[in-house]
Length: 292
Ligand code: AMP
Ligand code: ZN
Ligand code: FE
Ligand code: FE
Image (cartoon, rainbow, N blue to C red; front, side):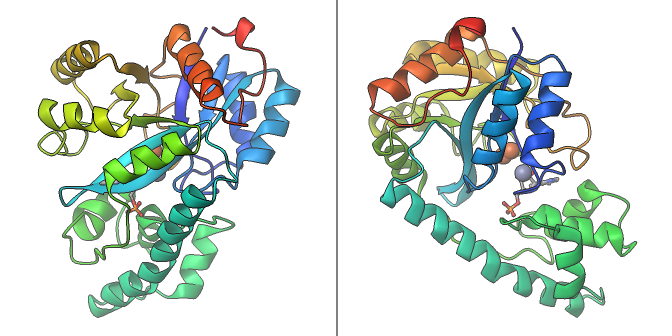
């Protein structure tokens, strides 16, 4: 019963099309997979068609870029209504902010002597509708400036790095409330990954319960054994769902193979039932009985 609740297609910064991603998940033996591209639902319909055909359950999700106490925090939103005006307007704002910052990052790179043009980036980014730093990282690899995405972040693109440019993001509590208003289930992605433990300590997580936080992605490769143990204890105490997922990005992120981290069937059932109880028109594609 392998369930993986966090993956990316090339609609954002993964490398497979939504359909190919879902087929790869089925081939890898997963029973259920969530497509959670950054800040967009654009891949949902292609993924749903592929899931129905491949006989794998699909959770339609989004990984929303938010901000909390000056830090970027990723919020997984499962089974939201894609026609909820408030949520869609917020996603549009994030994507517009992403589009605006790309030329600024390329300009910074040119200032550093890297011949980074918009044309070259467009070639690397392909048909992605949500451009991000990983695409700029791919361009740096393509230009032979760095060997891989990780080096591109370390040398140029990490927060505060020489080519880093900030962009718009909604406040985390507001985003959590908006996901609930849109019928969805908000789960904080990799809460203690990449140094965000300080902004999301037990007190902060407790306060986010008032906004409607539903779960924590505890089992993620960014977390070590101790962090998982502590996060699980906090989730238990607060009555939060605990998920686990690969955060697969295709060939764009090494080691995050589909199904390398998984979520318990009872948790998937709770997510599906919560969205249903909140009146979301978005349901699981496929049969919950066969999965959870
Ligand atoms: P963006 O949303 O465009 O600001 O880019 C954020 C994405 O870049 C995240 O989803 C990660 O996949 C990736 N990322 C962020 N920091 C790093 C890092 N230090 N090394 C490698 N990838 C990173
Ligand atoms: Zn990503
Ligand atoms: Fe993330
Ligand atoms: Fe992700």
